[in-house]
Length: 122
Image (tube, rainbow, N blue to C red; front, top):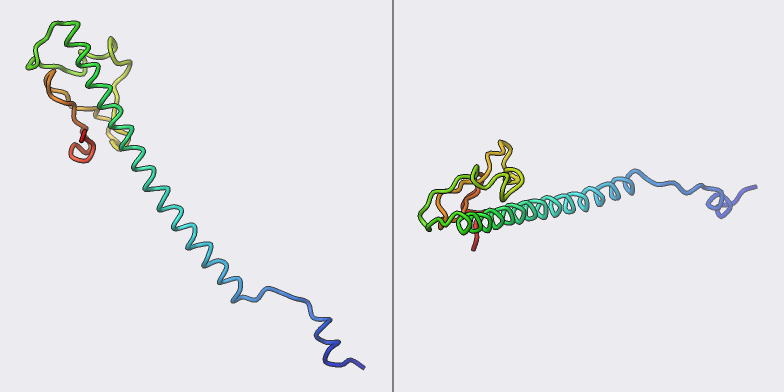
């Protein structure tokens, strides 16, 4: 005859529905935090890529102005820089239309067409 102790020893241990729900909830919370951090870091990296493009354009405008003996108020276009100074038209990674950057004169800094206030030199 079986006793209480024997019955407890023969039971198989199983995961309850409550335990599974707790594990799923914890995993969901951790993954949502991770995805938010990935998104923020991606946006920050795209901003730094845009600033790198702006610096590159500004440096190449200076080289173009020196080579062409141009004054500070002389107008410049991206076509003047491509392909002699820049291989292809750079664009902001956040700009889906790929309009490129706005350049006006030798002395003016280039501007991002997507976000000129946030993607600018300090």
